[in-house]
Length: 365
Image 1 (cartoon, rainbow, N blue to C red):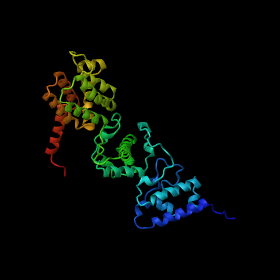
Image 2: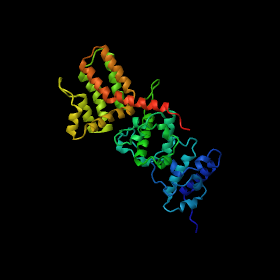
Image 3: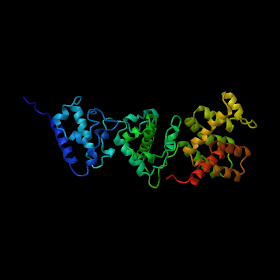
Image 4: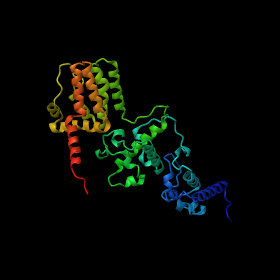
């Protein structure tokens, strides 16, 4: 005797028929060729795993009975299938605001680096992140400038612009020979951070959000605050407001050793009259060569070239202002040491020679 279909069966059949009818209309060809996994969200539960790699065209070509008879597919999985198909037929398939979540989360969820899981990023989410970066004109931004920390991030992608990834699907990025699991995670984390910031903060009329490392904003605000007072700051004030935030960032991006070496080279914490620790003494203390110490210190300029390229001009302008207000020689020397550490002239000269060589060489045919 044939089993009488339940109300849920009838609803699922009707939803499948509706999806077939809508997808048969013009303008849905590109969606039919996408896998079902494209429409999933990280918060989805009871996903029909057997269907996720299959295209919508393949799924809709089968009957309800055939789909329901698939191994590992029960009624709840069929209901999730219908929900995913419902997302696919919406007028704007990338509008996540219209997609209900299976999991309720607090309005203000604490942000922590270890909470980000690249495996939960779907093609649908990645598509929306790319569109946001494109629409906000952020394709020029560099991965290294916006990632949480440069320590452990391959240097070859520090200067890679976000625009490089805008024409790739998530599967295509993971298939790149130059991108392993670590690099893919960094890229996804940067796009995720941009999306979370720009979609959770309510913009006010006439104001805009500037994406920049937090330390850079803090230092630039401190520089502006000093100049607004029209009085020369004390050395302790410069150390606290400018040097400490920069050293904290160097520790985050380069590690504790580079921070310690930088602190000693700047003479922070020294009593007036004491000499700055030389590279020779630093090398002896670490048990390495002087060349190795210089190599570690050069990481500071490499980081700032990516993190805070505007810093060179900011510090140069501040140094000029210190001269105008007759700041103490102690303050002037401290700032000069900072500028040499972060933006050494020899580093700029090397870049200039490289650019000059590129312009002088004939273009390859």
